[in-house]
Length: 160
Image (tube, rainbow, N blue to C red):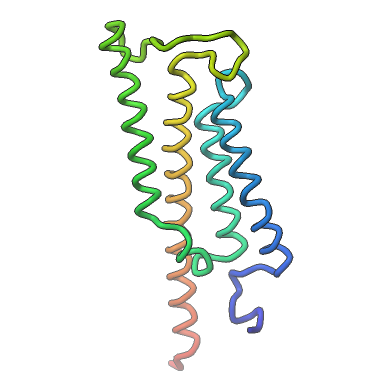
C-alpha cells in the first residue's frame, strides 16, 4: 500500500517502537499508581500515564489499526469498577470509624509499599478510572476523526 492510501498510519519504525514501548509505558503507569503514597504521583498521574500507552498506539496506527484490539466495553467496565471501588473504600471508613474515607486499614511502616492504609487502594481505584476514562475519550475522538476522513475520501471520489 502507498502511504497516501493510509495517511493516518505512521512509518514502520514508529509502529515498531510504539509496540515495544507499549508495555514499558503500562508498567511505568502502574508503578506511579502503586507508589503514589510514597513518591510524587498517584492514581491520577499514573492513570494518565497508563492511558498514554493506548494514545501512542492510536497515533502510530490510527483508529482503524487498533479498533479490533481495544474493547470499549472493557474500558467502560474498568472505569465503573474504579468508581465503585473508590466509593466502597469511602464507605468502609463510615462503617469502621464513622467517618467517610477514614483510613482504617493497617498503616504499616512509613516508607514501605504497604504503609498507608486505604490510600494505595484509593490510588488504584482512581488510576483505573482515569486510565480507562482517558483512553475511552481518546478512542471516541479518534472515531470522529476516522469518520471525517472516510467522508472526505468518499467526496473526493465523486465528481460534482
